[in-house]
Amino acid sequence: DIQMTQSPSSLSASVGDRVTITCRASQSINNYLNWYQQKPGKAPKLLIYAASNLQSGVPSRFSGSGSGTGFTLTISNLQPEDVATYYCQQSYNTLSWTFGQGTKVEIK
Amino acid sequence: EVQLVESGGGLVQPGGSLRLSCAASGFTFNNYGMSWVRQAPGKGLEWLSYISSTSTTIYYTDSVKGRFTVSRDNAKNALYLQVNSLRAEDTAVYFCARYRMVIVPHLDYWGQGTLVAVSS
Image 1 (cartoon, chains in turn red, green):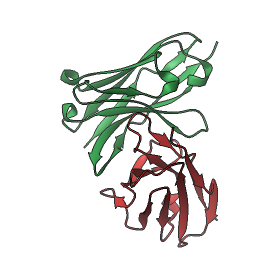
Image 2: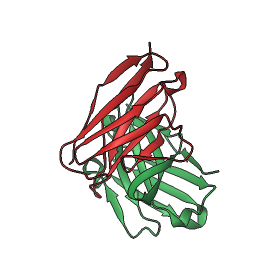
Image 3: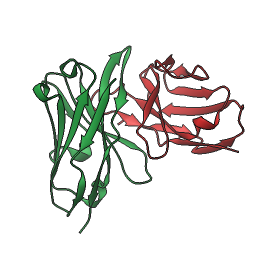
């Protein structure tokens, strides 16, 4: 299986801050990388697909980059409603998709 | 509006079975593959299975192969997950999600989930 490792596991930042979450794959996955946001008690929501493509309706303060084994999710202007856990997910291995362990984002 | 609504979860004893359902609406169900993903209490997401739009292609993660069976009824706009031989470690919220292939595969809509609790 392809292992996905996120860092940090949690972070605390102020409203208006720029926040960056990193996701590393155990082997190259090209751009087969998606990002999801999950608020407490809610279902996950797709934010970014194919590493850098913003899902329709997602605020433009969210952006993604990377290719191969290293990827980042950036929130450019952190808002209170962005408090959530963020997961990366690889869809390169058709037979076995895997998620990162999650990064919990809180407001300072 | 795309809606996915799971049902069928509950408390079951180890070794027991359940049939989870996912009712889809707001899109042409028979045009889309679907997946199941679960989340143990306080833990991360685990992809479980995929079924293509016509049920011709099915995948499972290794930990559930032979115990879980995914199926769908396109006439009823419904997705199912038959879960057998349940273990304590299967305790989780089970989500259904719509599979979309644009540039790369991803899950673009998710249901709210149904809780399966395995305990004696």
